[in-house]
Amino acid sequence: MLHIRRATPDDIPLLQHMAITSYRHHFAHLWKNPDELAHFLTEEYGEAALQRSLSTANCVWLIASAGEPVGFAKYTRQQRIESDNIIGTLLHKLYLMPGETGKKLR
Image (cartoon, rainbow, N blue to C red):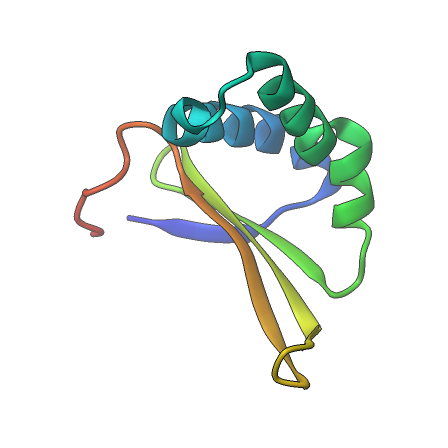
């Protein structure tokens, strides 16, 4: 059974592992320069970046588990969408670990 919970600062090592593993698996082929990919991953998923993000009141990270962690999501509440001049919820990330895509949920 799938269980989804809100991430906390204690989850930073887990989020880093899941983010870097899943991002590399799904998107590394799109990067021409491995150093640029490594820099992006450090900027996006480094401990300081995750700590800032997790401490932002309207930013939410979720971890999905089915016996073990299978994916994560990040969204921001009360996000202004400039092109439409509205405020809503913005989904930033929705990643699954390698081998978890295409499975039926139970």
